[in-house]
Image 1: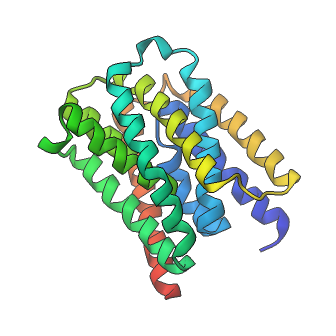
Image 2: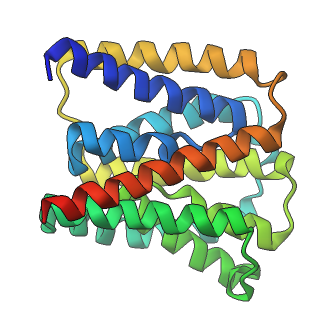
Length: 242
């Protein structure tokens, strides 16, 4: 693969993830991580997803921070801070093929649970917040995908979409900051950083433009379908490399 082709693919992945994030309030990591991992490798793909998802959430949170629920976010974020180092350690220790398979399996399992809207008694109340936060922190630093446990917690807590989005963005900012601190920043060239930054900006504009035209249920199904396809592909490529 030529350098130009690789950079164009990278920009396309980030643009799609950014558009989805702005369109639905979440989903960058679900859509982008499997493809970023296939393109850049497990370590670099995860940390780039952490940086991009965190940056997008910071901008998105600017307009909705007043709707953040501190009482719910404190246990979620504290639990995540405790498990992020374990996820980062796992990513550094496992061989690339095994890491790719594990990441793909985590994404696939998480998407299937979210698709089912699973009702889990353990994900209710303060205990549920700790369980979801811990699972999200581990998955975010290990596989770049920390949102599904928070989605499941929100489903079991009965949150509306309006309540979920700013709280999910707040959690994303915190957990991605922890993950970047644990994993480091991506080792990309200046040219690639320029492509990534431009793609995030274009994706944001596209997502905002489409947000009023695509029904939320359709957008959500699209995100989950893309994420499931990426997760299964990552598992297959990881197993093929064993």
